[in-house]
Length: 306
Image (tube, rainbow, N blue to C red):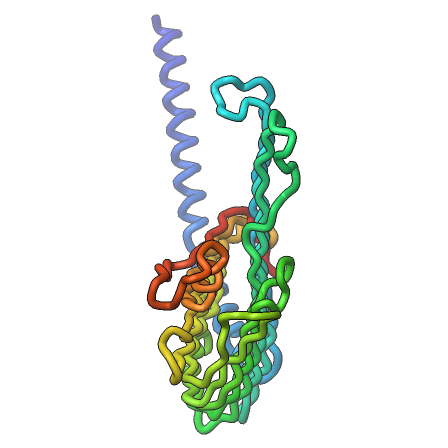
C-alpha cells in the first residue's frame, strides 16, 4: 500500500511538473506572438506605401470547376447507361498604370463552360461536350486627373463570345466623361457621351445607339481573399429597349500557394438578346411581347491566383 501511494505521488508530481512547464512555455510564447503581430503590422504598412507608388499594378485570379460521372446498368436512373460532365473555367485579369497626373486601367474577363449528357442507349444522343457558358469582356479606361479623386476619362469596353458566334453579336462601348476614384480599390465611371455599337451578321434585331455609360468596379485582396465586382450599365437615349446591364462578381480564397476555392456569379439584362432568342421560336415576337428574364450563371470550384 505504501509503494502504491508513493507511485501515485510520483505520477502527480510528474503531471504537475509538465503542467507547470507548459504554462511557462506559454508565458514565453505570448510576447513573441506580440512581436510577430507588431512586425506584421509594420510589413503591411510598408506594403501599403509600395502600393501607393506610381507604376503598374498587375494581377489575375479565376476559378476552375469540373464534375464527371458515368453509369452502366444503373437501373434506378432513367438513363441507366450514360455519362455526364460539366466543366467551367473563369479568368479575371488586370493591368493598371497609376501615375500622379493620369491613370490607364485595363481589365479582361473570360468565362467558359461545357456540359455533356450522353444516354448510351440512344444511338442519336451526342457524346460530345456542348458549350454552356461563353463570355468574353475587355475594357480600357484612360483618365487625366483633375484632382486626387476626379478625372476626365475615356472608356472602351467590348463584350462578345469566344467559342460560339464570335462578334455575332459583339457589343462595343466608346465614351467620354468623368471617373471618380474615392478609394484605390473602387473606380466609378460616369460617361454621359457614349455610343453603344453592336456588330452582327445578316438580318438582325440588334440596333446601335447613343446613351450614357456607368461602370462601377471594385477589385481588392484581403490577405487570402480576392474579390472583384464589376457593374456595367448602358442607358440608351434612343429607346429603353436598347439598354442593357451586366454585373459580375468573383470571390477566391487561397488555401495553399495561390490555390484555393472560388465562386463566380454573373447577372445580365439585355432585351435585344432576349428578342433575338425569342425569334428563333416565334417569328412574330416583338420587344413588347417577349418576357425579358434575368440572365445568370454561376461557377464554384478550385481557384487560383497570381
